[in-house]
Image (cartoon, rainbow, N blue to C red):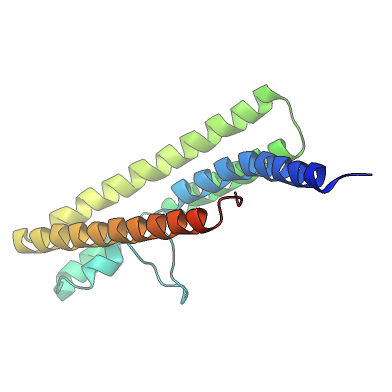
Length: 171
């Protein structure tokens, strides 16, 4: 018969092993997100350029130029990264050998690198379309949002610390 202590130890051990397998996959998934996540209504949030561009008062000509920047291969690049991420997850779950997992991870890294290069090119072109005043406002808005994000992270960490102080036995 398993004692309560043994059951707790087994549960904690299982949770830790699960976390060691899941956390890297979640991190790779979040890295592959092109501009952050979406809010509860499905809208882009955070640093997504479109969210910031709305506040810059673009002319109709600038809007048209921004729409023309859409890279038709970006969807293919994102799809390739998604496929590689799925293949890597399956390889881990199926217990494939280390060399196969490393190959999938390498291919995922290359796909994510291609996506990052594509985003960087688009961003550089976008900044060329903006006027000096709009670029300054864009950078200020971006800095403001980054500051707000840091404040949210700090509040989250403070609340986490308080919860751990109240319940030190939780993991």
